[in-house]
Image (cartoon, rainbow, N blue to C red; front, side):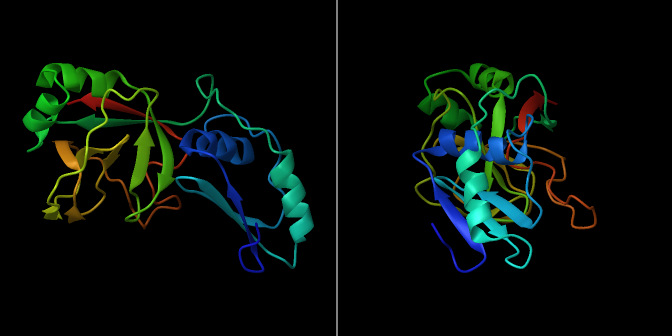
Length: 206
């Protein structure tokens, strides 16, 4: 669908379809199914959509639409692509309560969190905050009934189907299971975000 005069919005059925379609457009995690045309400015995935912005002086909307319609979703990213490893101290204030909710021991929950392969689905909430998804639902937990007014930077959390790392101190309602010293957002770097949509993420117990 048109989104202003310099963007198109693609609606997709679910988050899995968004991740696969985004990979097909950009090559995030694997080879792109098509080359990105000249004039495309940005490709932004969200929970159910992909927004593509472009320069109308360089490429016509009809050409962008043709590219979007020709793209093939890519599901397999295991053979190539960018992998990010994050060391975590599993010492979060919600670790015990979250494990109890999941009906497993703290050690079992940590083992499952570290052995799962997470994928960057989309960014939001704050610069550098990427919503991570995995291939199972065994770590699905509700958000806190009362959000915290301050969550420390580097906090590793779970909420709904997602895991994520707070890049800076901010309010938040996720279940905090650990902390990391990794810098999620550094504006002085050419690529400020440590994790990008399409990246594969591995958590390692520090």
